[in-house]
Length: 118
Image (cartoon, rainbow, N blue to C red; front, side, top):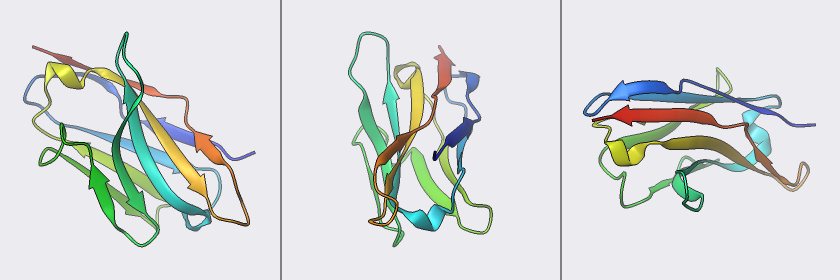
């Protein structure tokens, strides 16, 4: 069973920075893409950023210019660098990975809380 282990959440002041990490229990090369989603209280889960196996990235309009998604193949880890954080960024952040054909499936992490205080 593939697991995605997230870390790096917590409390930060508005304007501050935080970095989330997602480490899969299998090789990062087994995924077509890896993403970060978030879900705020009373709201639907939304895509924050995605990175493909080829390194292409895309972002939600609300985080463009502030967040950066990346992957370190040597460390088998994906990251989300969050800068200029706003209270509206407060949410549970989830790592997601889409398996290549030989692995299949979609996988989710357990979620990590990010709280931005004003």
